[in-house]
Amino acid sequence: MTDDTTALARLRCQVRRTLPLAPVLAAAPLAILPALRRPWLAVVFLTATGLCLALILGRLWALLPEHRHQPGAALLPRLGPGTWLSLLRGLFLAWLAGLLFLPWSSLLAMAPLSALMPGLCYGLASLLDLLDGYLARRTGTATRLGAALDVELDALGLALASSMGVRLGRLPAAYLAVGAAFYVYRGAIWWRARHGRPVFPPPFRVGARHAAGFQMGLVALGLLPVLPFAA
Image (cartoon, helix red, strand yellow):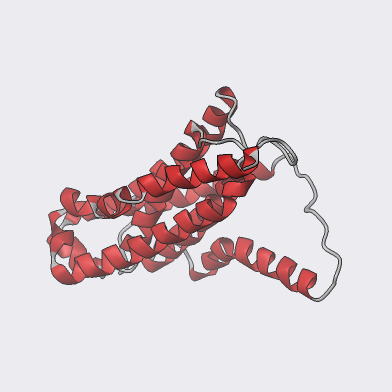
């Protein structure tokens, strides 16, 4: 086997060894919040959380061939600490997906402290977004996989968090457009490429990263129980 083939096989083996942890981690909030153990709430939460976690792991699997420092460089045989931190961020987002579909008026009546959970999940995911890239750079393990996964988790998180904000009445319905923007943009690129239209890379903007960080912070703050629920 070539070096890249061997490295890819090791990466896939590493990911497969972590899969048994996924159901345990998905169900962890049930231990923290007893109200979620009610059968109907648990089914809703675990179904949405499990689907979101499966999506994230599926994207990780698909991106494994990009686990290299730059195009043409050797494939790295092990995931770096920054990537594992990104996956922890993905876990918080999967929990947020599970929370999104719960009947909040009923849940708050049973467990008032559950009002903290959406803001904590997205707030912790946003905090990890600041750390995963830094850790990857400090350890010399920054890769194309990590960069791509970071962008996709940013988009997924903003889509889930803006939907949760609207769901709880803390953000206007128009804010759904913010969460959908990335997917509309990707869909437009796919459509143009499929129809033979020219596709150009987006222009570099110095403040884009700062604007995105501000947006994430604003939404995270909006999910905290500062304003009343409207569920």
